[in-house]
Length: 116
Image 1 (tube, rainbow, N blue to C red):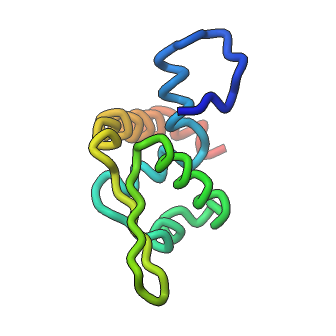
Image 2: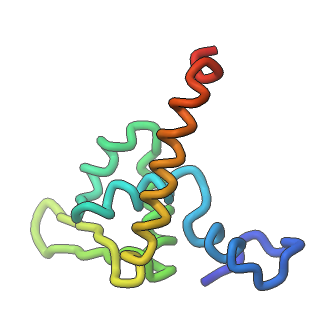
């Protein structure tokens, strides 16, 4: 694990560690999409049209380096790469599911604010 944001006020805080691994705009979304099934790179690009190819690649590499996802490259032409959760990544499922439920509740409760 790396601490990309050195200088946090909270030293060795478990919440900081979690956010360091899954925080950011795209990592939670990536995990949400691969927690139900293995996904190919281009499939994820279609599921997340707002992410650039470069950013998706960077985020996937960081998740792989942190041991959360597994990347499998098949020796075929054109190249085929699949991403899935590792056993350790599977432990994030309840967190990602709760984030989804919270987002659903927020949208229902604050629909008038979201429409502005």
